Image (cartoon, rainbow, N blue to C red; front, side, top):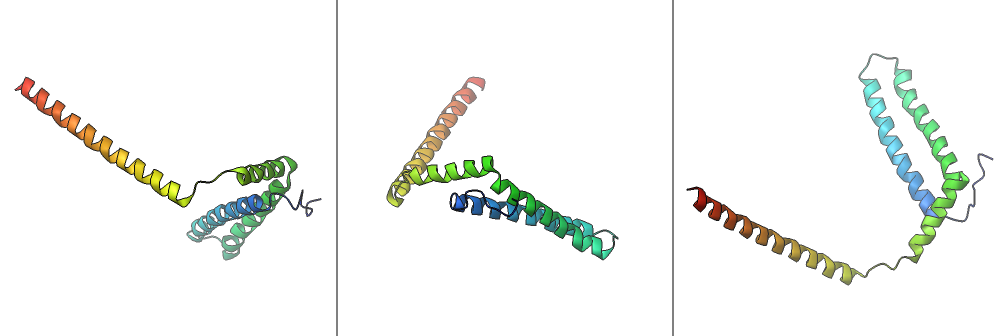
Length: 127
């Protein structure tokens, strides 16, 4: 049962991306563990094998989780929903980005001018 993939033809990309992301995080964590153990006076076998064993155990855990029916069904449904999304075109994204940048710059200038006016007004009142 451990080697059998639950609904193998469905949710392929979400499972792969989730698995590779988990593997990258686990790899980084095991690399840091190796560095920490390497700075000690432990036996070299312990220094080298501990991160490998931890990575292997976590890889089996992630594989099991990706094939657990509730998790797999969620990932399959998420991939199905992403296929239904109507993504904006490149031109729409560029125009929207330019509008946001212009509005942010305009608001920054407006708030800066308001701050300057208040600073001059209260400076006049306090002097």
